[in-house]
Image 1: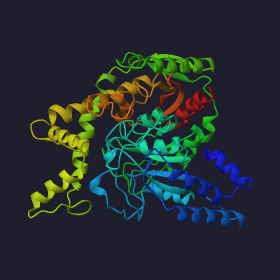
Image 2 (image 1 turned 90 degrees about the vertical axis):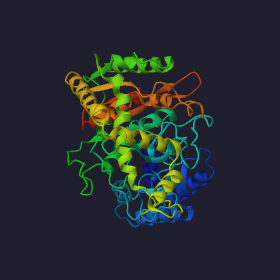
Image 3 (image 1 turned 45 degrees about the vertical axis):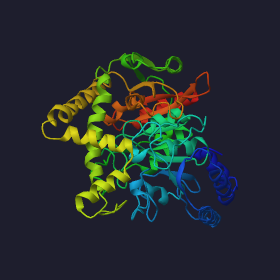
Image 4 (image 1 turned 180 degrees about the horizontal axis):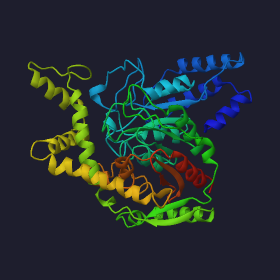
Amino acid sequence: MRSISEYLSAYQSGTNSESVISSLVDRIQADQTNAFITAFDGTSLVEQARTIDARRAAGERLGVLAGIPVAIKDNLCMRDTRTTAGSKILDNFVAPYDATVVRKLKEADAILVGKTNLDEFAMGSSNENSAYGAVKNPQDLGRVPGGSSGGSAAAVGANLCAVALGSDTGGSIRQPAAFSGIVGLKPTYGRVSRFGLIAFASSLDQIGPMTHTVEDAARVLDVIAGPCEHDMTSMDVPTADWISAVQQGVQGLRVGVPTEYFATAGLDPEIEAAVRSTIDALEAAGARIVEVSLPHTEYAVGTYYLIATAEASSNLARFDGVRYGHRAEATELAELYEKSRSEGFGPEVKRRIMLGTYVLSAGFYDAYYGKAQQVRTLIRQDFENAFASVDVIVGPTTPSPAFALGAKTSDPLQMYLEDIFTISCNLAGLPGISVPCGTTSEGLPIGFQIQGPAFREDLVFRVAGAVERL
């Protein structure tokens, strides 16, 4: 079993959750991808499944994810559970409360199987920045799974769970989904509460599901979406019948294809061919293909790495060795701060903190951070202009397929460019999804990205469902 539908069908046919979860525990223990930082106790998981079986047998009403194994990215707080954000500085931190999304999964009777590995504080595109070791691609153990939600992608791709939650600041759900051959959804900013998410860049971060099927992503979004009194950026906006939308097809939809996405230097020819073939298939299925322009796409990466690092510099200031997390031995307060942060943070996190602190400093704020916010507005306006004539925008998720472990660790700029197609979606606060659309000649997965107007996940799901069927 892989998808939620398959699990639920088996349970309805009499298969007990206990045997399913017991088998899953064995697979997690044999995992070779390093997907989990903390895999939960197998005995406890089996006991949870046994309880669900008893409730089902007694005719009790169960949650919509009853007995479904779900993994949680380890930057999401879970009460009384170690939560590290992939960093040594939080190695021994135990969260005192549940993130809103974790609480909702528990209320839906999901079985949470573990906390997944990630690039430290979600900063990375390969999951090689974790203090707990690199994650390996489930399709090829010599390659990266993508990042920062690489552990979640690997857990789903290796069939260690049906669903995993990730967070997406500049592509951290969609890019690893593309690399690992699964579905990854970044909802509209504000659609899902960020309460309990250890912040990287607060105006960009969004939580979403990573799944085997588009329908599964719709099911999970239905569970975790909605306003939250603890997160003032979460929005009380109407939801839609997203599961039905997956089956509606694309007849009559206007599908935008940005010229800039295919003029990008470094776009792998096999990815371009697979994406163009998928666009042709959508046209054959009844969609109207429209060429559009997103003229400020070329500035997206630079804009992102000014705004995101500035926000990271501010957010990570709280990790100082005083209140929680790693505390160094020191005799003076300034020494305590310096040693605790130097020992606790890894190289990529230090790099981004320094960059963010620089662009926020006196004399540089207007020239860098202020200017980046102005460009962000232009990028958002590009999408607004495009959506005046199309319903969705499609293209490749990544410029290249999954690369070898260690291939880009010495060149941060090349690593940053892996997110060139995904970053704009976060800057504009839009929903986006990556769906598999084929493989390279080496058998590596290729991702097809669909972006929609704000809070129009229904349109995104319609096209994603069609791509999956095609």
